Length: 85
Image (cartoon, rainbow, N blue to C red):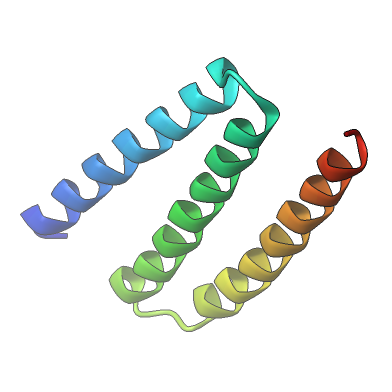
């Protein structure tokens, strides 16, 4: 791995940290849901980057399934929050 990979993973770590803090400290449920969706997008992108680093296409399949499941999760939670009003 070269230095750019370490820089990338450092920024990803910061993004995960900030998203996780917003999930814990978010003032509203909508903010928490947006932070969860952001966290899922960052993790999906990280899995795709790992496919590039390790030169393994299996990670792309995993990223696709994870992305689909995280989208369904976001829609279900948003519908649940919408029904609470």
